[in-house]
Length: 350
Image (cartoon, rainbow, N blue to C red):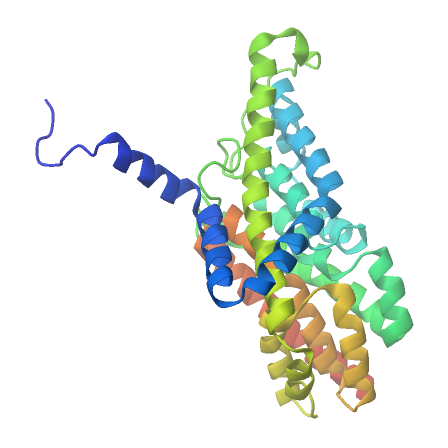
């Protein structure tokens, strides 16, 4: 029997609801560009150029991640990959943190890989370990950090990156084990196991999937879905980053982070979230501040907090996981940045 108490929305309203529910990033993207057109038309072209160049720069990562996600779904290898990440949580978290701290991925390049890992059912805990560690350090970053801030600073930041990954992954694992993070991923992410909270019994994969029309159709569907998902969120992230570069003066950051004691570490931790541009651009800024007398602990706190919560990284977390996991991610990032900044400051005083 049909329920007459609720009016049946027409196709227009149903379509509008679908767009609002599924395409919020694109709506926000267009709204920001319209506001820019009204209030600062001269910034529209530079912002669009920033988005385009950033997307082009990570295109290889996007291409590989889309192929991985589509290939895993079409062949059935996603079940085997998810199965490989079970049985030894401590080892998986450790390996995720080490891979994140040593891999040549920036905070932007790692996003497609993380999305692909979650989409094929890798558990959230090792992915979070990788997620936290990866934006903080990579081989190029290590060399530049050593050159600008010194070898001791670079080694300390590498160790902190791995430690942040281990701590974050462990916290997520314990919370999920206790039932506190049930279904942590947003709708449409993961393969029925919510990112690996459950792993299905794997069937033998069909490697030659192109011989099966249904599997080829799944390959195309998975590839298209992954591409569109990443494109809309990354476009919004890079647009916001362009506005930050345009409207947040570096002088303001310099003035805010000066001083000594514990307070500058607190300020650096909090300011690092909105004022952080990218890992490479932040190094000369921190180098200048330290030359002007800012303590190294505050510089470390700024680099850690800003690196993990930079706009592309944070928006990717927001897009892939539910709010409680996002809040946990931010809490671990800020808490870890403050503690490690304080510890590094005390270390330099010894």
